[in-house]
Length: 146
Image 1 (tube, helix red, strand yellow):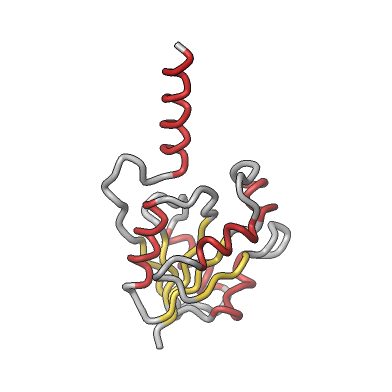
Image 2 (tube, one colour; image 1 turned 30 degrees about the vertical axis):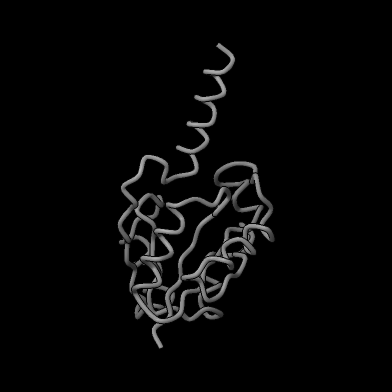
């Protein structure tokens, strides 16, 4: 069985997330999704709109997903979750700010050099990302105030 791991915040679940997870699942047989820990989201992005347990439940309800776990808090090394999931492939979203070569090097130096890193294609839709959705909402709210 080929195990795939996908990672993300999944704060405001949208079509781009579904597309990412569908493509990730197509790479193998079992898809485990790592939903970012609230403290990690706060440290790296913003205050989460949706708490991690609810994000985990929402992602678990998506058809391509076989298993969902909450990721490590920011004080725990990110690679510490790999022995638990044992992925053959790590699928990255098209817009995730991760450098594949850097991840491959980090995996190899930690003894995980058998794990492939694959970047999947994005969804060709104008509302394929959380920031785009928020911008559209704000734009429409401003239009109503004018």
